[in-house]
Image 1 (cartoon, helix red, strand yellow):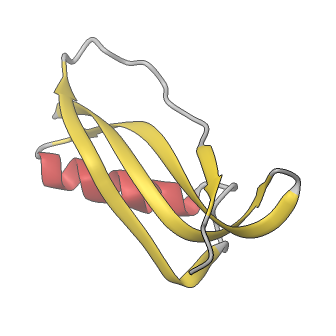
Image 2 (tube, helix red, strand yellow):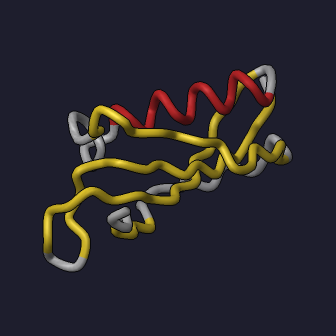
Length: 91
């Protein structure tokens, strides 16, 4: 297994931003052990959707995009959590 840190952007989730429940986006980093960058990317996105902050909050037109998946040394075992949220702009 290889060790990856995956940086993901999500959009169109019903989240609280600035004290108001609204369509929002986020950035999040997660550490994943996988054989390939593609497996790490897919695992990170699947895990994010199951985290309590996001589970069941995806709107019908949501998206998840891996911005960066970077292989790290095996001894790098930092835990990544939390989200940077932003409101979706109305079009």
